[in-house]
Image (tube, rainbow, N blue to C red; front, side):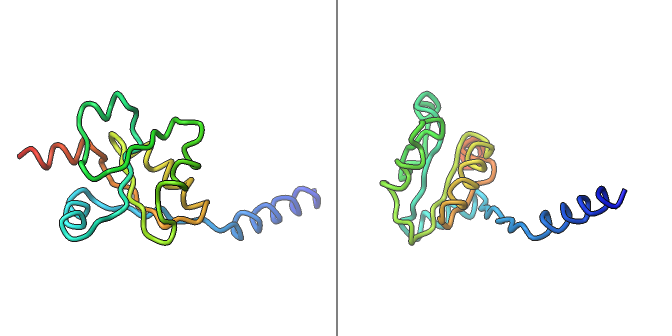
Length: 123
């Protein structure tokens, strides 16, 4: 019984001491404002097929499903500047955001992705 309590308390300590990096997000409205002011590092992580359906003109295209996704990102962007990611709805770019955070990038996930961008900018 003492062993189980020790394992439980040790597990709690490990869980509480693990650093959790918070995912930064940005709305499509905020993104549009940024794009109107500055040249930002914007990456579209959708597939080629999805990109053919429309894109944000200044975005770089790096498919999240490419086996060398991280290598391509490292080659394409300046790690010292913020990186903004979007996909169709925000799910894949959220996963990519976590990956880039773990690799030392300052990164923002665009909430709602291209679907929301298109809806807001086709009014």
